[in-house]
Length: 232
Image (cartoon, rainbow, N blue to C red; front, side, top):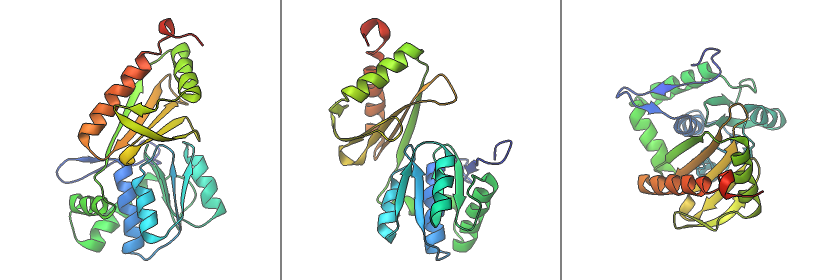
């Protein structure tokens, strides 16, 4: 965990660092499949959509919230939630307090291994395969000045692109930042950091090639909006 134990980090025996998105998927499946639990799945707008596929598979409600665990906690107070989490390492689950808890995440991971008697790497692979993965996720942290950030948000809000790296934009979400839903299930989220002077660009694809292409194209699109090239 981190210093105050509200976020978690998990490493398998091969030394692979498992992302919070991966662990959220694994533990949601564990709670349903091994422990017979039920309830809604809650995730932030920046968190993996594979949780949506898992919810659909088991007939569960899925709720998307703005970034910040406080929004997940609010939903946990309102309804029965199986698991709630965010890509930055916050997680809570049914029967626990509506606050993120890194120790809980670690204990549930150990429990999943004990229940199934399989290596963690195998459990992760099975969880991803069960919802037609794979999952390729990436985050760009771009250090932009205030004028550049404003130009990016203003342009993407008023006139979002119709395609990114050749992939058509099917839908635009504005729950927290600007989220571009691309064909074939990929998505990109632009959101100014609330704690650092950064523009965060989150993306999720089903192939490493797409991830590379989309990340590179987003950097080009954002770079073109530098203040010297753009007028608000």
